[in-house]
Image (cartoon, rainbow, N blue to C red; front, top):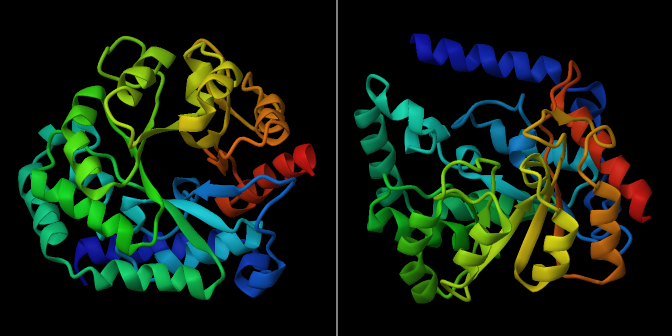
Length: 316
């Protein structure tokens, strides 16, 4: 067994041991998972499942599905690192890793895979979710300048094969400009995801940065990460009220202001209650997605369920 295979096996075994007994033993039947709670559509960003098996492991998708069933969450925004057999490091998202030894080779291998894998690969993943009564609602793929136009085009095709209603992307304004013709040709939305880098003017971090992208194409939307938005000292409720018709989904996480840390739901400065009630009471067509990132000694599946229960109590 190669060192990489040993590492992957060790990681999977650690993840499997971390799963709560209830997740391994039984989960709610599909018909028992509510499609809405208090009139809101809830989902999860699969990044939240930190201790799932690594990219490319055959147990990764089944584990995510069971985690969603365990937390009674009917849909997800699935990250490309959970679909492709390559981590996000191999596809250039983490800028600092591009100088790592072997990156160029790894990036070219990932590009070749993307351009040659049959679309049936993605269809089979979609069918696994559908068989469990779940849905992939958005495909999270982080476009950047290392993508070729052929990769960009192929990514749109992959998202459609997954059955996703659109793409969510942690990207930058300069890349958004390159994506405009692809959105127009495919007539398919891309929702820009923000962080809280207020120094780089190319980043999505402020209301103004989102508004620049929204003006580029009618196909551009927003994935509003409320935690990052608050950490950058922005007001998510005001932004939702102003741009509710262009927001595809919100990422629910709690953070402290002034670039503060992630905190368990209800312990940071993100006005989670106000966000949820604003969307519910105004009947805004915005999906509400759990994103667990605050860290815990408990398995991530337990924490995702805890976050979902926190939100359920507010709106139900």
